[in-house]
Length: 194
Image (tube, rainbow, N blue to C red; front, top):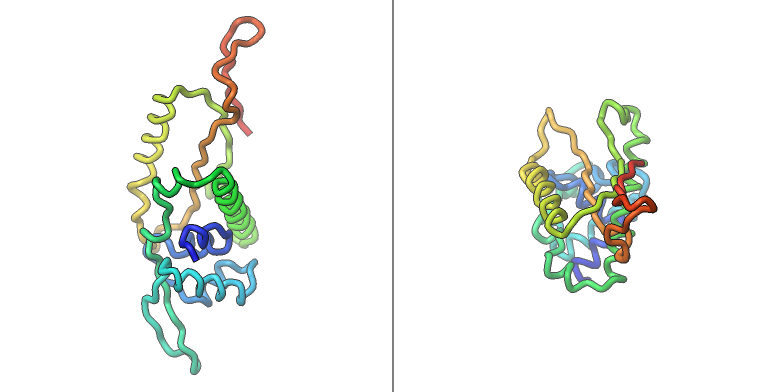
């Protein structure tokens, strides 16, 4: 199966999230992390990701007569290249977005289901801002977001670190609107928060 196709599934995306930052986990630990999916489902998706080379075995040990395998992520194989994204059809983008949103919802519900969930203390945010941007302003915004995020992508797990899921999403709301004027001749601000 095509590695990109493999990543278009919410459970497989959650496995990738769990193993990010250089973590190694057993399938049992992944089952605990993705507790809303059955063990059979997690084992099946781990097997598919291993077969595609997205996950690799990082070691094994015997536990009560069974071999327990530890897996790690092949980060470069778990990303979709800019060229591949540019060649994707609109339906491909619909499917990818739906899988990403399903994984995001599942991760958020799993977080809220933990006894320690405290959205205020954890500074959970899910605001949406509708902004008007020229192409140059859009490029500057994306460059600024990359500059803020990329240095942290290589962070490995540590005693004083918690894993957070950050999902920047940017798309035009309507391709037809280009700074229309309001009734009084003023430019519409287009700002909204939810």
